[in-house]
Length: 260
Ligand code: PGA
Image (cartoon, rainbow, N blue to C red; front, side, top):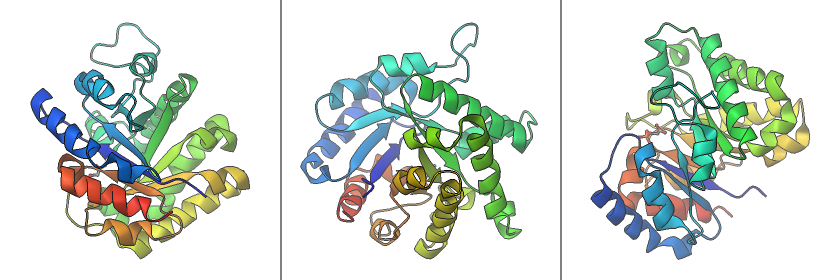
């Protein structure tokens, strides 16, 4: 049985004061989360604050991005070793908002997938659990290219280190058209894509596929979380906007815990 994971991606939001009260409100309900892994992804400058607030509570934390380089003259980047230094367990990799930024530099999708694979390798070699985001754009969705997009990145990852490496990885299916739009994928749509992803990994290693946690992300709220999480291949969520509202986030974590 896979333990669900709920990951709260704060994106570029918060202040020291607002973080403190949001964390306190979430922690007040932490006793309800024993059957679910809950992780918080603050902006990098607040990782230390989150570490101090969450150490010893059973909740986890991580970063929204990681550099593909070890160290050196890369202004503004944060390395996997630095992230580990703050007891982070996870890092997000390849979030679509990061990919859009890179797109502005005219990198094509294959190069982007390669970059995700390099970051993945860097994170894994520092003992972090990468949460790799995969999902189709609105245009790709309209053109029926969802499976193609998912396969392209999965195969790049598998070619890099083989299926066994995915045993220390979480995947997040995040259709770009559902992120921040209030228009979540239906549980049936998400389940089909998740099942497809699991089957693709199973072709290489059935055991890894069976244990692989695949999260859904894109407009998950307190009122749609339970129906999404009730699907057999949806193992929790990557939550953006709703992770900034304590009641919503707690409701989502409770919905995930009930699926055990
Ligand atoms: P959302 O964001 O929950 O606000 O749609 C999800 C994400 O970007 O990870």
